[in-house]
Length: 323
Image (cartoon, rainbow, N blue to C red; front, side):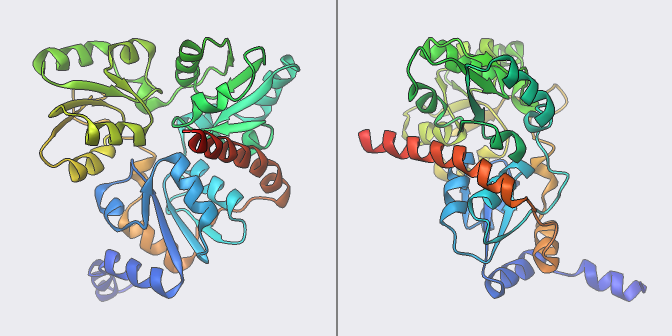
């Protein structure tokens, strides 16, 4: 490559070129709340895992560009197999999904043959394919409570979320021993210091956090629930125990309120998911231009994994109608 070619490439307006390609190729950009601000700003939809699954199922786009992590893009492909699903960076994985390998999970299921399997959406397509129903943090309690109290349950792969559900519902689910590195790292000592420094602030936390953190919280909920809470609640300051990306939407929705993220360590005032933050505007442009990396799943996996996801969506829809 000549120096001039390299210089010209540096001048590409990746945002402008991506938006142009999106229109030309009948593509749609789905983004999770944990993406960087500039990606959220140009996404067609910015929602949590449940919302992303719903939008993927409804989409009539030829191409779905998924600004999230691998398991989310897999879910989009499962629900919309007729669309080409692209992910900007194949290395954008998930600590929960990675720590629940299919072969080990099958071994657990075999040890509890009389248990049904409820899997958190943060798992691979293969794990979904051997689950009875999927859930998200936003509907996990609804999904669990849709089964009789006497029903024995395996819950995977997040032990913190599973433990929270056990405490709320009085169940005794068998829990896979996995955690989200973004939420599990948050320390009670850090939060207590923030609460002392900000006595007028409310603590809101994602249920993937450890139990002691959740016990300190004024409100516990999914990413969407946390956002909605800050919009409707009367407080003016919040300590936020989840991933930094949600602050973009919180500040956008409530510009007159203050939001303090619980830092992952003393070196920064952030708590970033390293996988979510792999996606960039440049990678969005390149993946849509080249139409790769593409999510490829076998028809068998798609068929098997689709059933528990659709069952989740039916439960959520039924619960919404009851309300």
